[in-house]
Length: 167
Image (cartoon, rainbow, N blue to C red; front, top):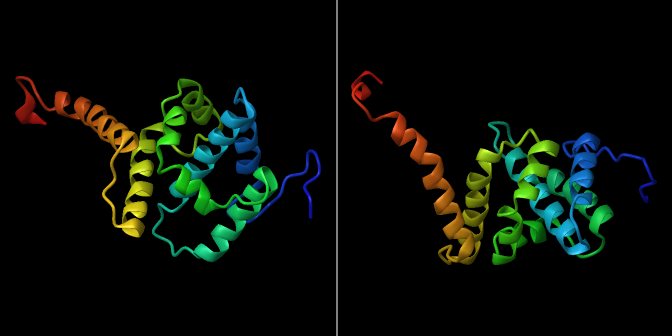
């Protein structure tokens, strides 16, 4: 069944509100390629954030729901697997380093805090490592390491000074 203009699909955990927010974010891209990349990364981050639960996950059902939405949005040949593969490669760098993307993601996907993006990207790289057996390297691994250091720096500063022993 094709989606009609203005009609939201409700695919269970991939609810219609999340879908609409991802589509709005996608439209903020300045070209078809940028829009597609933004969609992939935002959707992948939403997917990975959704895995952060103590509840049992039925991956077959979740993946089917995401794949249906991806198919209706991008067309044949795109799946959650291809989205996650894209997110583990060097081509993702222009998106994760884009202030415009990060601003749009913050506005449209408030359920996934920006501070969690490096962790989620690292999680995805870890899965890729487990599948391939190769150590993560390259620009994305470097970006993740830099972001982790940036996030740790304020914590280190908070624990220094003359009254640090009181913390």
